[in-house]
Image (cartoon, rainbow, N blue to C red):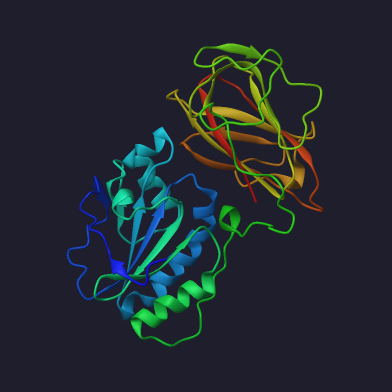
Length: 312
């Protein structure tokens, strides 16, 4: 990384949640690039939120920059709901045109940029982790000495079980999708009927029912379809949205049965959930030893869109 460089302008933002900061002059600024469905950002956010609350009186200004990954994330209303869900009360720039992203030459979600009171970026970090070092950077730029803040991250924000995490983030659209090998091959951009195989290999996924496989997501065209994944991790999440005005009920099965105590935050012990807003849904938080499991999600009505599996 360069020793220091002038922090780029935020003028390319297409809008702001909360008021746009009037003047950054003389402020230590932490810029956080995120997108609302990113599990890595969700697990990082409790720390950024804690730093903002601990150090704003000392002169820290945190600015979130929401740069969307998936099409539905361009909706400012969806970003506003994410801000409310995460209790974010610092300014957030809407970067739907990627202008701020390009100005920073950024390539990652999440990404942190630390600028001093002269507007020079003195440090940066990409992804999760390094929290103590990042907070010490904030302290150094502010000229503050104090114990590091205590952070309690719960629910979907809780740290991953890195020791047992074996499954990778997996996209379902054909532009970045992998490990989807239905008999006869996938059909792109038009409805096709699929069937689950007798067994899935590690990190393979499959569809059942009538689906359209598009560039960034799979779309369910008829009620009763499902998507399945063979994973090895404590937590399993799925980025979902819908094209229908009404919410869509769904059911999660884990190795063919209700998840019970291993249900995620967005389903009950019987595996039942409701697809409402487009966002990341936590389907499984395993209780007991982590081992390979087969997750299947079925939908009660057409119109569900599935974008990516992530794990923790």
